[in-house]
Length: 149
Image 1 (cartoon, rainbow, N blue to C red):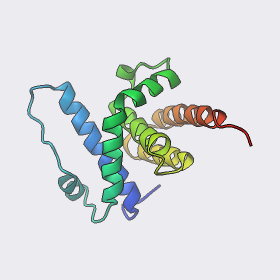
Image 2: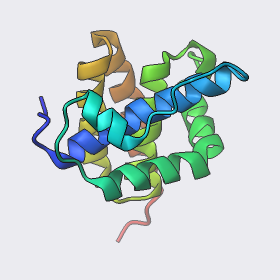
Image 3: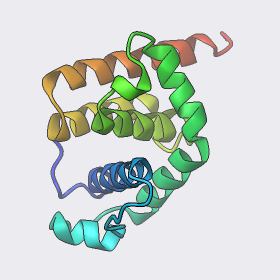
Image 4: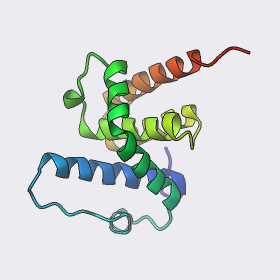
């Protein structure tokens, strides 16, 4: 499992927490939420160093492509509507798709591995299998679309 020593992994942890919080606040429309900053989240988590650029890129990419990402998730997991996917798992999927398949700042297989690591830390064992299945299907579909040389 990744440790808090890996600045890229800790950036993903913070992004997961921030996206979860923002999604939660959206569903509570009108209710007071904390609106944690990345600095506050890193302090709460006792994280001394994280990749701020990766954190910002993940948040920006997810926000700009949320509808597209969610459409992909719905197609890849038709048996599980978005409202039936745990909010943690949904954010993990959004991060992996944004980072590995849209932004392409990380190789897709690494993004999948990181998503599984986040699921190990923040979700259950069935979540790991679900996330791996959804992202594995996306990887197969994305590689089958590439022209053969």
